[in-house]
Length: 273
Image (cartoon, rainbow, N blue to C red; front, side, top):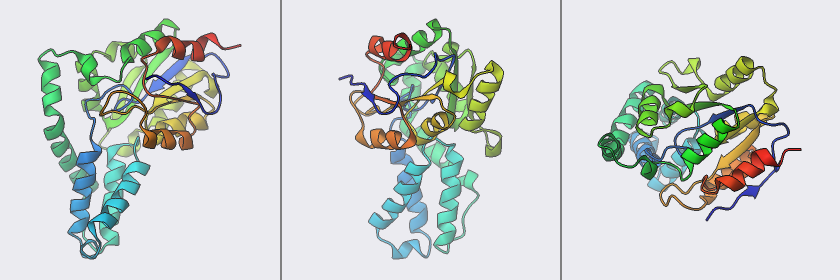
C-alpha cells in the first residue's frame, strides 16, 4: 500500500530543476539482500582475529551491523576500510580494504547472478525495479529536470545493471559510481557538480534515496530529500528500519515506492506556490 509521509517540508521550497537518485534500493532491486552477504563475510573475518575469538557471535554481529548500517549509501570500500580497522582493533593483521571488497563482490555475484542472467535473457525488468520506477523517471524528465544517478556501487556494475534495467536513457545528467580510488568519487562531489553545472541553488535540487548518506547530503545543501523506504524483499510496503534511518538523515518525505506517481507528482510539483 502506498502511503506518503510528510516528515519535514511537505513540498520543495522552489521548483526543482535537477534530481539525483541513488541506484540500489532506490531504483534497482538486483542487489536485494546484499547485507546478507556482507555481514556474514565481515563476521567471518573478525572471528579469526585474536580479539574476535573472545567475542560471541552475537557480539560480532552487533559490531558489524552497526558500522555496515552507518556507512550504507557510501562507497562499498568505506565499509571495507572500517572492517580493516576493526581487525586491527582485535589485534589481527588486516588485508588491504580492496581485498575485502573484491571477496564481497565475488560472493554477492554468486547470490545475484541468476537475476543478471534472467535480465540478459529478456525477463521483464520491472521484476527487479522498485515499483513505479519507470513512472518516476518519466515524470522527472517530463517536468524538465536534469536527472543524475549516483551510486556507491562500482561504476562499471552500475552502468551494466542500469542498461539491463533499461533506465540509462532517463539519466540525461549522467550515471556515476564508485571508483577503486575512492577519493575521486562521492555523492557529495556529484551534488556539487550538479549545482555548478546547472547554476543551481541547493533548494532547486531534489534527491531520492534509501540510504543515510544521500539523504543527508541533499538535506545539508537545502535540497528536498525523498526517503525511499522500500521493503525490498516484499516489493511492497515500508521497511521500518529504513524509515527511521532516513528520517534521522533529514528526509522531507518518506515513501514506500513510486506506485502512486500521481500523488507523488502532485506533492512535488503541482503544490508549489
